[in-house]
Image 1 (cartoon, rainbow, N blue to C red):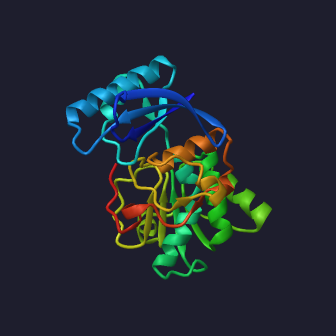
Image 2 (cartoon, rainbow, N blue to C red; image 1 turned 90 degrees about the vertical axis):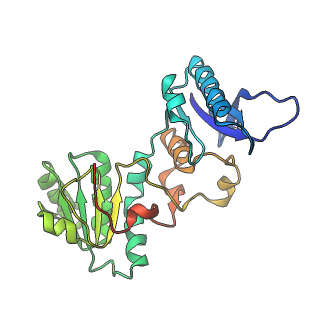
Length: 257
């Protein structure tokens, strides 16, 4: 079972930390509610989060959906509880974020140069490159191996082609650069940059159909919650839409590991 930690407003005769099972879109979570008020001391919050993490771990929870801007990861790690990863969701939305980032800058998608760089060939990379190739005419792929086979497959199945093995200058000058892994050697001067390896990058504009939206709990980290629901098969990828690029990471960026 996956956990979910939520802040709770102080009340009368209220437990500081309480655990219960909670169904979200028919998926079971172990929900830890931690009391936090505007005057709650930091030391008290750390103790409460530690207590919640310890109790969740005893119930078998190793991953949890956390509130936005959660600052108590150390307390969770001490008891073996880590945040739900958002990497798979970020990579599913890469093509949408590229399209929206180009639109914000007034760049025509037909003539845009889209570069993708990764350390290895994966299913997520193949999916993203395929979607980008179907939407954009000029896609550059920087990957150490497997690119030739993907290129043949895309040409055979869809009639599109990739530019394999772009040099550093081509990556730096691309209208959009999609990074599955860090690149410390690149210096971007303009364009959209999506660091899909970075869990800390903000994820803005994620939404669901209204009928599902109203059933989500308030205060939960949106990217983590949707990632957990997608992973469990409760949501389909087409039900999650992205209405904006993921925050400042899409601006001009100096890339570091």
